[in-house]
Structure formats: C-alpha cells, structure tokens
Image (cartoon, rainbow, N blue to C red; front, side):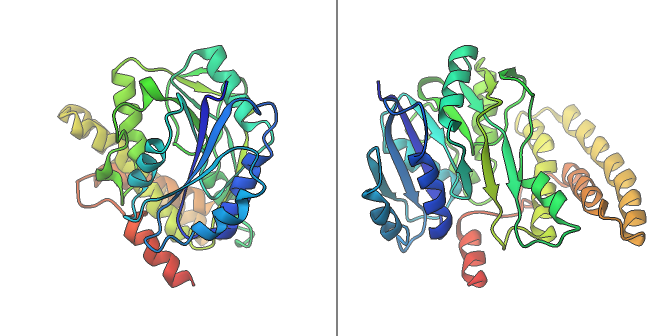
Length: 312
C-alpha cells in the first residue's frame, strides 16, 4: 500500500537538491510504500522547477513540484504537507543524502515502536572546511542517538524524520509560520505533540549524510545557531509562563557561559582544535540568558535568500 510521501523543501540549491532526490529514487525495500516525492520550491523565482523537470524521467514514483514563493521554513513544510494526503510523511532536507535503506528503517522503527514521530542519525559533512575546524563542523551538522532502535524521551529536528500525519501533523498548517525566519518550527510542533501524549522513536539504521553548504560551514554561522539552540529551553519555559523555570535556565546559562567561556579563552591561546567546541558551549549558555523575543538570529526565509545571493 502506497502510504508514504517524502517531502523535500529546497531553496536555490540545484545540485544539492538533485543529489537528495536521487537518493530517494535509490531507496530499497519500499517500492510499494511511496505514494509521491514532493519537492517544495521556496524560491520566489521558482528556480527548482527545471531541476525537478529534469529528474522526472528517472523517478520511480510520482514526483510533485510545489512552488511556495514566500520564503520561510515553516511555510515550505506546510506547503509540502498540503500537497499530499498520505497518512505517513517523511522529511528529507535538500542538503541531505539518504542511505539506501533510510526509509525502510524509519518505517520499521515506527511499526516496532508505535511512535508518532521517528528520527534517524545524521553524518555531518563539511568538505572544504579548515582541517582544525572540520571535526567540530561535522559533529555540529550531524546527529547521534541511541545505538539501537526504540522509543526516546526527547525529539530531534525535522530533517530525517517520519511522522504519522493524523497525530503529529494536525490541521492544514501544522508548522507555526511564526518560525519562518528563525527556525524552531519543529520544536514548537513536537512540544505540542508531547503535551498531547505523543511518542518519539529512534531508527538507528536510518542514516543520512548532511552536506553543509559553504555559507553555513563557518564558525560564525554555527555559533549563531548554537546561541539559538541555547535560547530554546528558556523560550519554551517563557511560552508556558513558567517563570521559575525561565530563571532556572537563565542561571544555568550564566554558569555555562562563565565556565565554558574561560576554557574557550585558554584553548584559544593554546590554538587548540578543541576551541570551537567550547565556543559552541559558551554560545549556548549565552542563549539561555538572552532568550527574549526579538533577539533570535534569523536563518531562513528572506535572510537565507540574501545569504545565497551574496554567496553567488
């Protein structure tokens, strides 16, 4: 029974998009499960249309092109969900490459765990980055989890995931468009799912590789992301008006910023390759302190479009 749609949001990455979609074409053991591959083009100019058209002749399943011209990560994901009525939705980002049994492993994990959302591991790749920085960048863009498949307590990000539409993606626009430019649309979705009693699973064999594009494979970008990740716990507590929890997270952040900042300074003086890791930890601590609305870095939508235009 064809019951899975794979959604690939994209923004001006034609080569990367083709690599991602062809990795879906090569999936093994799911020939009768995929109902469609949906590419959501989030570029106002519709630049991905030609790439999708060129791929269509090789597609083993229906290949759907959806233009979502208003740049924004939640808008793109919502457009993908609205383009299919499949009961199961898999997300693969346009900078990811799926292993041949990626989708089969996600489906097997969902069936064995009964989870509403299943995540898989990611191997980060940062080709062309400085040798001292590459291990940090590849950890940053990667994702590790338990060594075995099973239920997990905390969710991960939306890229490399499988969701039960009925329980995990309610309504016509399940992703909050308030997150369009800052990200975190998946955090909001999963926090709401957890409050409803939803369950999360881990598929240990559902590997993808994530290739960081050059404009993201920089220390400046990752530290801004680390700051935003640090803001998450404080903002979640603030959204729930749990002010004691906000103060607790701020106190934790202050301690982290102080301890990791001192260590980062020492490692910088020693020119240690490990210094990037401690810059990251310091940034996350600072984010817990400065969690207030309006201070969120903007990574998506119009800001990402501007970065891509500057990059050439």
